[in-house]
Image (cartoon, rainbow, N blue to C red; front, side, top):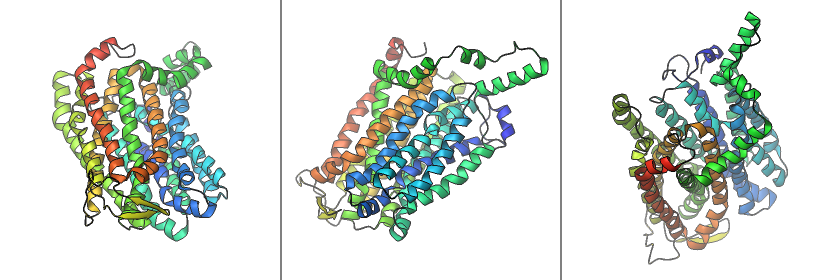
Length: 486
């Protein structure tokens, strides 16, 4: 944490580490919010039993939250760019609403009311997703920024993975509402820390407040900051264009942005399909209970730790010395680790699908076969649960590195539209993830888990060609792009 006075010293040249460490505030904020999506997963069974609804209706508690945090940044990201507002008010005000809404969510006696509250909590907790990276970019140089961005992404990856573990045992003992109370207990202290210690990092807001003080001291009304002059010329229409049209415009009119949005959306969708696949695999086929199923999600954290260590080693020993010697270079150089990591996605998924017991199992009263086409998927009944767990770990290593490379490539290639790029990317991937939550269960039930996973793996194989094409033809695409920096 860091003292509020540190805001006076925040800036792009701030060193990594030191007395001020607001990156841990952002990481804790992001971790708790992302944890809030998956902490609900073990509660789905309780929702079905208490309200007598189907598994698809119960899954809305997860999908509505995910969909909402794709919509929220479209509004909150442009607001954080306005000098008179800055980064912190959207964080503090909306997260306070998030914390308050958890109380009626835990006490809800209506399934419709509960789903509305889940949507609202996802919406109001979302500002960290689009502008958290921008806040870190305010403070750290381009050389050190990859370290803190990857640490922030590590928190975002581990949040959903730890959610089922934190609530799995308690929900089984105390009921489905317990997951909402746990989320309240976790998010409340984080909001207090944000309110008391988070420094303002927006250079426009800091300079605006300095200009106000100088006007009071000097009595000269002509002393104004650049942000004030830009804001005076800004209309509601300008804000609306930046919030709603610009993110979609960049995706529709630039093939590089479109591919990165589709690729990250596919990865994100597959990641969230695990919250439907894991109950089928570990509860149905391997006979785990809810708490033990939560332990299986630790494979995601193990994979993220391995990926983080490897990625930091690459930055420290390869990328950073190259930047100091040759300068930043072409943005496509940031995609090199993704060329190798992209192969880990289909490999991990095929391991996951191939390592499941082929016997029948019951899941929510539905008989499921691990494999409806034995000639294509011939697993042995004695296979251990560690097989699919290793597959998920391998897949996580791949997605972590690929997403890190893409999220460094985009702001270097399109620096003027960074906020819109991340808002649009977040909207696309969250929308697909919300849809995936609902179609993944029918996919696995109707086709079998192995063939269903193989379809997703095949899609990631297609994207391998796309990432190589972006790396090889990136310079030509930038030359033709209306959004790229020339």
